[in-house]
Amino acid sequence: MQKKILTIKSKKNKSKIICLTAYSKNIASIIDKHCDIILVGDSLGSVLYNFSSTKTVTLDMMIEHSKSVRMGVKKSLMVVDMPHNTYRNPKEALSNAKKIISKTKCDAIKLEGGKKVLQIIKTLIKNKIPVMGHLGVLPQSATNFKFKGKETAERKIILRDSKLLEEAGVFSIVLECVESSLAKEITKTVKVPTIGIGASAYCDGQVLVTDDLIGLNKIKARFVKRYSNIEKQINDAALKFKKDVVTSKFPTKKYSY
Ligand code: KIV
Image 1: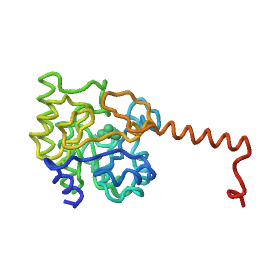
Image 2: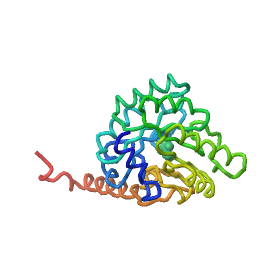
Image 3: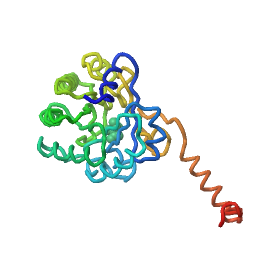
């Protein structure tokens, strides 16, 4: 198993795992030093392309964005989401995962689901492709984005799925919008790290969409904490540029040939 994956696994019960998304080289290179994992999430469909869901994100979109991100990631483990309808059976999943890895040089892939995708995950791992699991709210198949784990039956399924994913050999599991006490139970039960988004501080690590974190994306979700207001900074810079151009303060001789 590659060293970066072992490092992530070894953090369980020792130190928190930091994961952020990136869709381009410039963002990736800024956040790389602070992250353990950089995820090229298929959330790029809604965040960058205004799609109503991640279902319309294509393999080519993921590959092109990941190629850009690769140029900015030096230290972190780089994980790429397999988009919807690219892993409907083990053969399709293996061919597409190999394509993602060979074209983007990422370290691992992530896919959504539990028991339903177990054979697919086993096939990928058997072929030495590191897999990150994803349970709870599964945006590629969700009909709503309500948190998971309120009902006993649902809790049992998610807990069972987390054990199945662990047995299949995933190196970590994203828990998206999972009720706190269930996230705690899963984190205690499985030996691989859990990475939460809207799944409480009990998880072994946390992931956020960087565009949400910096205030570039206008999403209003309970699990999003905004750490900066980059929109204001871009707005102020554009406004200053406009004023300088209108008043002929830019470009001066210094900026001319
Ligand atoms: O697509 C994505 O960005 C994700 C994270 C929110 C976990 O899957």
